[in-house]
Image (cartoon, rainbow, N blue to C red; front, side, top):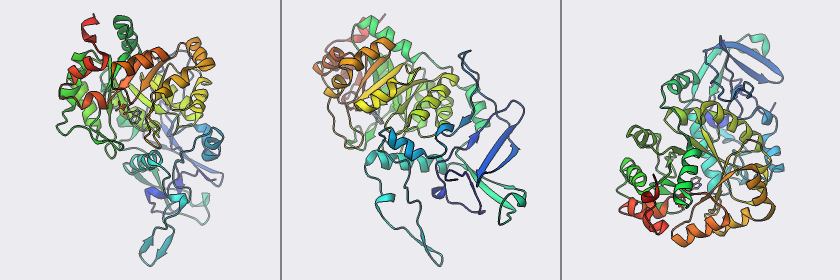
Amino acid sequence: MQEAICCTTSWISSNSIPSSPVNHTFYDTRFTFRFLRNKHIASFPCVRAQQPKATDADEPAITIQSRSPDIRNSPSDIAATQGIKIRRRPPTGPPQHHVGPFEFRLQNEGNTPRNILEEIVWNKDTEVAQVCFFFTYPILPSLYSPPLTTFSFQMREKKPLISLKKALDNAPPPRDFIGALKTSYLQTGMPALIAEVKKASPSRGVLREDFDPVEIAKAYEKGGAACLSVLTDAKYFQGSFENLEAIRNAGVKCPLLCKEFIVDAWQLYYARAKGADAVLLIAAILQDSDIKYMTRICRMVGLTALVEVHDENEMDRMLKIDGIELIGINNRNLETFEVDISNTKKLLEGERGDKIREKGIIVVGESGLFTPADVAFVQEAGVKAILVGESLVKQQDPTKGITQLFGKDISALMV
Ligand SMILES: O=P(O)(O)OC[C@@H](O)[C@@H](O)c1c[nH]c2ccccc12
């Protein structure tokens, strides 16, 4: 079985593990891990964790795993049929060549990221995996051939879910992200602003040297932002979960979007535990079953999911999924960095626009918005909210930046 999650050696490298679903299976009384390999299944009791409370009474209980259970067998084949070009890891795997104690990495098409988004996702997969726990448990030798006395498995957790669950209980309560957008839109008659706290990006480099996330967040709130987006990726955006936490703890009332590359359900819990009210799910990197699965988890833990699309195929995929309430159209192609705000218009035309209105989905126009004309253009196209980073964060006074972006002081229009 390709997606085996246990390793038959007592040593494993984080890179050598496929992105398999580790079963974060919660029971009220005990927690069982299941290991699948060559059709053998071994289960044993482990730490107890608890299933989060369903907020929707109709929502059946769910088993928490890293990724959707539906994709366990051939994730890349399914992704390809959905038009997803981003590969989730080097298909040729880790370095193959060993000479004595040395390892040689052979660079080839299979283990070289094809674009920046793929590179970010591979790094994120490794990052989430590296902060894991390695457990070594004795196992019945008869289950495997040759007999083993121990095996190790990787748990994609910086903190085990049990402690994250505790952190969830202590997390500040989730706030209504969509409600804040709707209220702002009604009060101002302009697209509600999700203002982004972003220090740097791979396409633009460092946007602001004197970066104080709390000060910027407060300035955005004062300027009339409905919600804030906080970058938490450290490697490419110089963001952090500490920034998110600090903004939340500083008493900023705007609901917070955790701007992260979510590749594993564990990250949803972590974001909520750190005070996020919403998370970003990127259709270019998550297949349909992952989106369905992760949006369900979001509902259970009280997070709003902002599902991001960039092209027609991604939009059509998301429109077939029930329960999506908020869709962001990214004007930036995350593979090439090209920005074109007419992308928002293109994806809202014709039948797609009709379907979005029918379903009552709120659309957010994302990236590359700098002027009142840009805001008017995407509003005309049908968005009720906008997500803006660069043009605001670069202003010495981000509050004034908001007034310049809209051509008027929107904070004065808010009750
Ligand atoms: O700085 P801009 O061009 O205003 O863009 C903000 C936001 O849309 C952008 O940061 C963004 C949109 N989708 C993302 C996904 C990951 C990281 C960043 C993003």
